Image: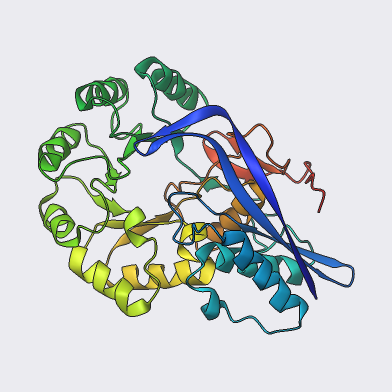
Length: 344
């Protein structure tokens, strides 16, 4: 088996605004395995400023992994746990190599176009008019769940925007999730949560910055709307530390981003630990190309999900890889009449 890699810089069609700043491009890396006539492709979805393995010498570690594979070493996923992007890319590439089709990692009714995955429509931060335009587009596209990035603008303006949606659509007609990306202060977070609760918001992801476990635990114990941990899970590699985090904070939900958590096996462990504690969860992509999104969607489907997942649509980038993934009426679908367009 031979391994190689290549870098790909995804370009946003429209800048993506979050409370951490505006994104115009997204770096990603592909790990390619070849064994005879078979090819396996994995995506190491490095997220600069967020991934635990966002290191200046990331490429060195990726090259080292390829060198080990090319020397015939057996790679144990556990040895890559401090490099979740590599762990994800390698696990994905191996699954891709083993299948009859490099793009069918988890055969199911999803990959045969017999079933679909309900997803939320993501509304990026920006000027209020820009956000309103996104909301109208998502509603017209048939989404039954909206997820809004909040926490960077004046909260009164964000709240007014949410009120407009709720005045037009009842909670039975539209589920609304929000993601603060740690943008709220511990000093006024409860007042903001109370205001959001009045609008019957489904949940809020990461209301305050990470590594304030006891503060967040107090918030979770008193919150009027469910709290979902997101960034808080990143960089927590050992099972005992994951157990301690969940036991300390006791959130209502966790958000699983396989590219940032170390792949599918690692994410499965989070699911097991959450389920043992009656903590809910859903899966979210993290700005991967369609290569990574495809694998994450297939893995998510075979978990038996029925609630809205946070899977991207691949339409954010001007230079994404053409794929059979499409969104119809707010559901991610796999169009068997479409083909992959790759140069691997």
